[in-house]
Image (cartoon, rainbow, N blue to C red):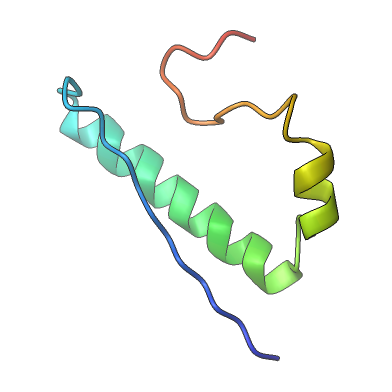
Length: 63
């Protein structure tokens, strides 16, 4: 199996909690690796969900 995995992170310039930044980035990277290896989500699934997708690690996420 050939995999290409690219991980990019964004840290808001007003972010002050280094421990929370590290926690979120670690969790996001780990999740991205697991999903890449599993082949999930598929490109079709990503496109289908683009209008309803929410950032899972956004501090001000509204549930």
